[in-house]
Length: 349
Ligand SMILES: Cc1ncc(COP(=O)(O)O)c(C=O)c1O
Image (tube, rainbow, N blue to C red):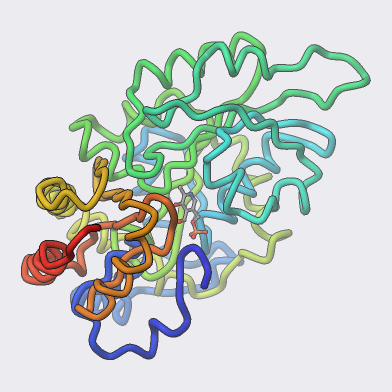
């Protein structure tokens, strides 16, 4: 079984509540209707009005000049790194961040960019001293330090803005560009209650996913300065991500921004409720922020708990030692009630 999925799970018919990821959401009826009626054109010709509208909408919201629509967050991150770095350059990145751990080292495999991982602190941020220590002097023996790549949220945790600013300052002072993997950008601004442009301001480029809590089936946007967009579109083409009548997907994104974004706060409230209920069970240590909950049962209870929950029709993450649970728009109040009651029925050893 992989960390995230379980092929057998797809054949189970008794699933009441799927807490494995916010990527599992299905398009809502309103979103499907918006997709069907979208105005379309060939976006490789620059003629899809719905893609253009989505790109405009995101860049305006984030206070940046331009945006490019991508099929995935992985490709959007990779295209950003390729725009900031050349072969033999190096990026500094958190040692638990998605770009370092979960994107198949694409920046190294495809772009010849070295990754220099630094420790991620308990709040999900990087310490400015670690960033400073990772920046290499200009010496022919070394890769060239070119980019600081941050992530927020990190495993559901919101890295405080002052921590971001401190790290960005170190990078800027050394002439590095700064990218944000903001896959769950809108969960962060929902939690902080700040506007998108304020949160995006420190970064040159920001990658935002529509296919997580926002509930779109596909899509991410890379947002940044106009002068980089030619290179970024070229990178997307190189990576095979230029799409034709992709307005059918962009329409889902526009719908998500208008109708689903306001509901993210409810996912956060559900996560807090699940976390509170889990703490009361004494099954294990619980942490939670934004739409994620992590439960660390005793090692001897781990697989028994997974079996118990599966029998009750509740899918939980397969990670160890901490099990990840992600709240999303397809987890209803009653599904959450069912999950909580299944946890309450479990007898820890
Ligand atoms: C933090 C983070 N960044 C990037 C990605 C990559 O997004 P995608 O699955 O669309 O490639 C993910 C996916 O879960 C993620 O959690």
